[in-house]
Image (cartoon, rainbow, N blue to C red; front, side):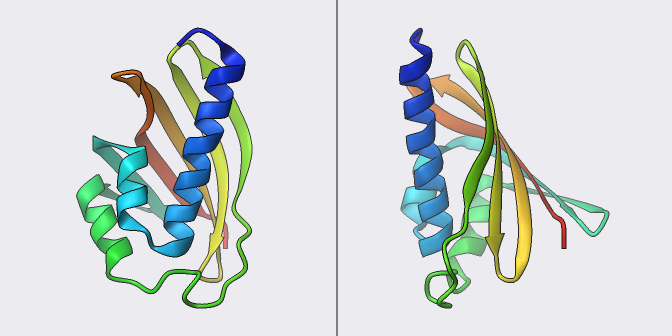
Amino acid sequence: MENSAVNEALIIDLLTNYFNGIYNGDVPLLQSVFHPQAIIGFDIKGDTHFKTINQYLEGVKNRKSPHELGEEFKMKILSLDIINNTAVAKVQVPIFEFDYYDLLSLIVVDGKWVISNKLATKVN
């Protein structure tokens, strides 16, 4: 994947699916954007927690979605750095009265961009 404009468009598409998966509680859509071996790291009030992608998706499956709770969609991409077949996205995910910031590592696997790791923290 050589073309940076194409890569940027593909990643923005992936991040849009990531946001929609979180907002709607759409587990299959969320699963489609992550690599099956992805690890999720959370910094919650100074405590560090790790989950596998399956543990993370199970949590999404077992909660009401922001959409179901009538929350406004406010998620956005703050920055995106692409180098060859790797990228890092900083995104803001305000849900459940919290302001989460996610740092997402992305990589091309079998010709497709996927999230390989997620670091998340909340600022309030």
